[in-house]
Image (cartoon, rainbow over all chains, first blue to last red; front, side, top):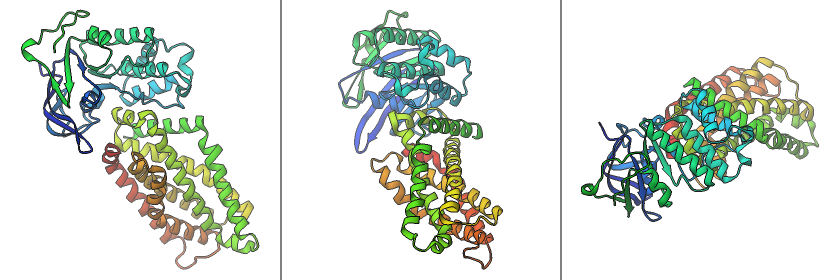
Length: 230
Length: 224
């Protein structure tokens, strides 16, 4: 099976600064890979490059079979990217935000209700403008959009940040459910304990490069029993 | 593309309906502009009547800058522009949707401003078909050009000041043509070949910017 993500000597520049400085990195379909590393290591840029948001200017970058160096747009309908910003419209309600994203992705209306229910947003919060929500509720709404899109590849950047305990549990459940459906997950997190529990593999980033040790790479562990590398 | 355009236009208009920026800020601004012109030229009402067409379209141009500014401010908040790019919506659909929403707001503002020039400047609305055709073509051109330059300046920190600097000179042909066409219709100037040449220029401007936006908006959105 072709890898979900295959980067070879991939370079992404932020201005003149190489945020990704020749990344070699593979993620197999169905894997959940945790990317760890200090601030500024390039984790966010790696996830943005996988989503086609950050342009890869050199090397090879294939995501779900799409060459994102040539065409950054092609892959976008097949991925969900939860970044630091929630990307919501303050003047639309929770349901309207999710519905807009689902319609844009040509998804069915039933997905909206299921995602809202899955994240506990189907009650009074459903019809509240996002601008009036707390940071954690906004984060849940953004996560509801990821769920509703039901993508092949989940790109989660600090997904637990800003969520309360219940929200974190719901997030973990959503990610495990996605993995169970065969989705691939790439997540960057400083919350090692929670994120490791989700991951089947761990890699480290530093200085814009991914460091992993193929000889120590363990086969994918059963769900809930992750294997750790690096 | 059209389905995406309707989706984006619907979203933008819904946001405007909720936030009421157009009704509570842009519309009063448009009226204030007309009133200030009236104050400045008040001693001679004949000047106001003769200048009504030009003053109307200057006010429309200012409103267009505000409407476009607002359209992209919505996308700048909380990384929404990244969300729009990730959504997979056809960029041409995003362009047509955003331009369409701006055009709808401009039409409403033009209706308000038309009432303003009648009441404040004593303009006599003759030649309704020409007035209407001018409004439609000029609005499409302004909305399309505004959306192109709006996305160009969207990702920049200086976008608030850059957009008028980019858009106002580019929109000069619209201001000129629409003013001349309205002058012909209102009987306050022009004459010559009538309104047809000016309407043709407005149509060309609109077609050029709509076509350019449909083709180039994707690349501009990626770079924003």
